[in-house]
Image (cartoon, rainbow over all chains, first blue to last red; front, top):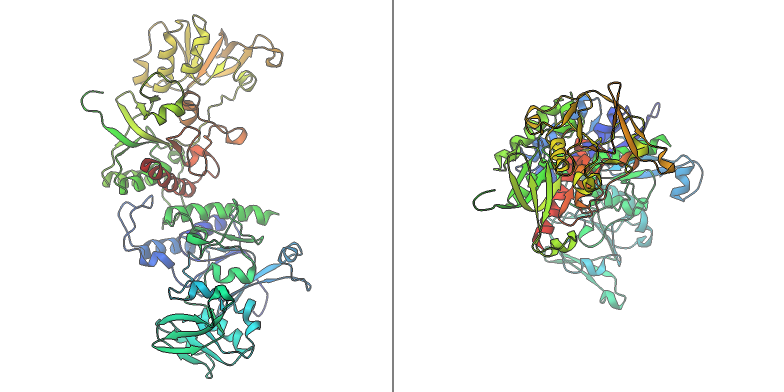
Length: 318
Length: 318
């Protein structure tokens, strides 16, 4: 981050329908914004979209995403094809209270492998995530040795054997943080290909296991106070005391614990909780589209994006 | 209404973004639906739409509306270019309680000058209305001689001199109802051209005034118990005891009083109040888009339509 720092009004994370719809409104209101996104999420899998108003003929999700990106690019909005690996609240002084930090004029620092971005507000339009591993033991030991946040929980695993489940830049970012606390780390890609760019950043001391994870085991049942003791992958059992899950691209809920954002539960797990103004439980951080759950449809995401933009405009006015 | 009666699952009133978005979802869920609408409302005035997700190049509101209509027509949904002039709840037996009627298996009868339609549910996607006349005395005497519902209030004006403010089929429908109660009716078009089709149905006893309305006057101030006593148009004062406003095409709030639907106030006047499932205060009647107020944008209307359709599907399942 050299030279003069550009403080954006809003950083929109996600370049799907919710993010781009919000970008249209913010750009037309002459706000200084940037859209950052690595992929188009669930739209990439949509072979044929017919139920979105205004499409005379069905188109692919990819084509619709492409149109949306062109639409904001034509308005002069930068759309960065980058992966957000961390979001931090920067504030003057030494206060750790997020609310207070914002009142004091805090800003958000959003980091990608290529760049740093600073903004007054952030919009999560990152889609709905599947953070869960569908293996025996995952639900049982979640929070009992299984963590989604290296910054939050890494300290408890100093010099202990741990595993990181990840295959991309986000996983490696988490791993890098943990590597300062313990050198005994195994990286599990869970059968997914390891991103070549991310692979370059992995310290050579790290063991990489590309087998599919079959189970997570504890020293005794979780209800009797048990915690994670091992992970089974490719027919082999790895003794571990902690497992950090950071698969694929980081989404809203991956940052939730770090930022103090409330998340949904049950069928709404993998989503952020927002108020009627689309604001999360942290002032200045908004969310829209599949990232807030509900009806997972382009139509609803586009509406969300417009309404979230309206709230962000109100918030920036203050 | 001859022959076998077709009971629709849903009648969608309005062929703009909210109505068509809902139609897409209902049609794809194999529901038996019809869209009825005379015009495309506020979209007709939009010369250039840029802020709706998925449009690579700006288009006119008319072109967007046209695309949407084609989209549902391609799915086999009938889109009727007709004006809804009345909506009634039909129910077996002699009960006047709407809630009870629905529990008893009530259906909605929607009437246009050309046809009758019957359905289990109705969606108002009629846009936001301006029912107010911007003339001195209008606000003061609203509800004190000024009415929006001939069926509700006509009885109080038997054999009295009244005015009907209207210029289309809806105004004439209201006038026809009132004509059974009093012959002393003046029709005011408020400077608007009289729809030629509607004109044919006006009884010859009726005086038609095409001048712009300048004021509404009372016998004394409304706060002292005053009521409407005259209307000024084109420099002439007409002695009247009641004024029924039914301008243009009937919208959601024109039917609200007749059906018992709660409506918004202040900046939200001209809108219907709905719950989180987009249902109005009458079970089986839903509303979406500008008709429910809030952010008057295509993006929000499209999201509303999709979500309302989801609730209608839930409702039809019961």
